[in-house]
Amino acid sequence: MSKPRFPALSLFVAATAGRNMTRPAYVAVAVGVGTMVLLTLDPAYEAAHRWVDAVMFACLAFFVFEWVVRLRHAIHSQRGLAYSFTFRGLVDLAGAATVPVAFAAGAGPQSAWLFGVLWLLKLVPGIPGLRQLRRVVVLESGPLFSVLVIFLMVVFLASVAEHFLERDIQPQTFGSVPAALWWAVVTLTTTGYGDVVPVTPLGRMVAALVMISGLGVFGLWTGIMATGFAAETRRDNFLKTWESVSKVPFFAALGPAAIADVTNMLRTMDLPPRTMIIRKGQQGDCMYFIAAGEVEVDLPGGKKVALGEGAFFGEMALLGNATRNADITTTGVTRLLVLDLVDFRLLMARHPELGQTIDAEAKRRALENK
Image 1 (cartoon, one colour):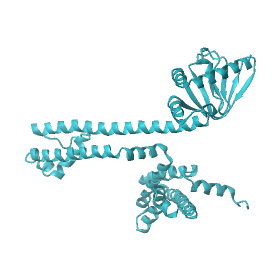
Image 2 (cartoon, rainbow, N blue to C red):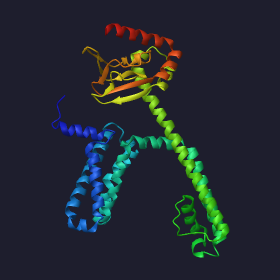
Image 3 (cartoon, helix red, strand yellow):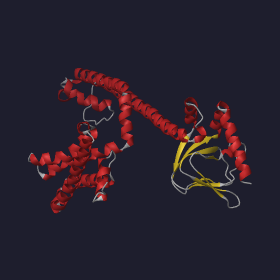
Image 4 (cartoon, one colour):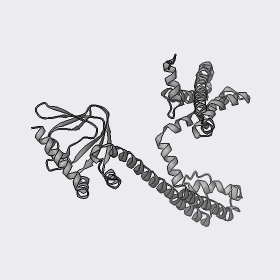
């Protein structure tokens, strides 16, 4: 196979065609949107309109190139139509086409470039939290829709009530139900601009009920979303921990039910290189399993031992000797699974064979390090 003539360009094209945004794409979005804001300032745009237009056209050219590369890659992978109708495909198309279409329709630069705000949407697929938000909204769509129905019912009922009670006194404000809808929305959301206020006693009673209902409605929405996010976070953490646990040879002999039990007890910890995990002389209350990476144990007497993927350490703190007897530091990017003392005792009670294995390994190390 012949080597590409431009390897750097090939790597860039491959990254651009991939799922995640490249660093130049993030820079282009930041520069493009920042420049778009600058052109709305008339004095600044008039003083440097050529530079502003040049930067905006450069960003536009980048996004057109990015869209073409991704579309070409999708067509070659026989996914051209599927890509075109995904959120990413539609956002890429909008980022590449809306500004040229605006210019073609006769819009001026200060109007056409405003469509560059759509470039911000290109950040959405690369933010994990937004993907999680979308999943929560889909899973909780039933309860969220029910609360939305309650919101709309309260808004409409309040509008009709205030129209009936206030139309003769404030015909300009409450003369029709559509006119009263503005007051109802503002009051139910507890925004309270103060531009529309009931003056009759019954009208104020209705307003008080609407404000209290608004607190309840938004409290329900917040509770549903918070519960959904918590459940989704637990699910993600469980899946990540399960994957890490299944890679540790120490747990390889366990069945799925036992691994699930272990997964619920362990917590993951991702550490950068040269991070001290355990310091000699400290009191310990947990042990660690190495899911990925490597640590270095600095034993008394200057002896150093490397522990790699699948090994564990710190078990002596759980077997009676709570004082750490060595410094332990990561040598590279390392993922650890942490088991606390209370969970350790529960786990050993449910799976005595694990306790025997840990105890035997601890005794072996103690003899080896003498």
